[in-house]
Length: 318
Image (cartoon, rainbow, N blue to C red; front, side, top):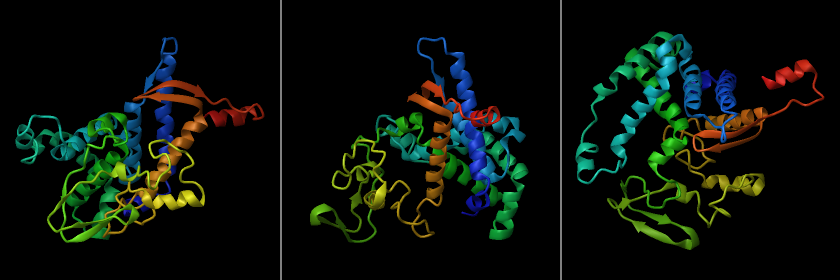
């Protein structure tokens, strides 16, 4: 939370600058293919670079451009590191019991990802010294633990939290509409009653196994009208605001506030605000755009208003 508070003033500025650089790269690639039958420009690498650079500035207080290797390969290192963290909890399609024996039964060897991780470690140690010192002096955390904690927040909570929405990662997890893609099983620690619509209740005993799938809860037809459709105005107005309590994307109801005891995403408000900024930047820059998979297949840049002066028009294009 302190890292978020410390970067509150620079967050919007750094994010807009990062998105601008990303879209400049996309525009250049798209313009280079303008004569193709179906021009397209991939946003995958520019977007991940944008996210990584922006989060380094926001959380670590360091500009990745200070280190060429980190600037160009930092996001790839985090992709590999993230995969190493979540692989033991995922189904990878191997024949059982080979999957359990090879993937889920022992810690994966860390030496395979250590060189990249150590590169980021040294970067934070050198260029994020202020954030590290803050953790040491204000929270009594040792230097090594402080750097590792900052890297975990940067790589897993922040970079991983943004990257999980990218199509190529979503495809690895599975289609969100597929009701068979259940989350890992949980065993209850005590007896309780699970209540549902219409007064239906289920007695759950201690030790019994439960399975959950979050997207199904957020597409409940008893709660949401046209749950399988994207409805832009769904959460607008008084009636829409009442539906927010049924959103659980942040590990808790959208109307709840993060606290040490509820494990809700501490940055849930920041995530929403950042997503709004991304959309705002897209519509400030383009009159129309089409995305297919990980590529833009149509980009129509916004023309400045004729009523603007030449200087103002130039500023509007920037």
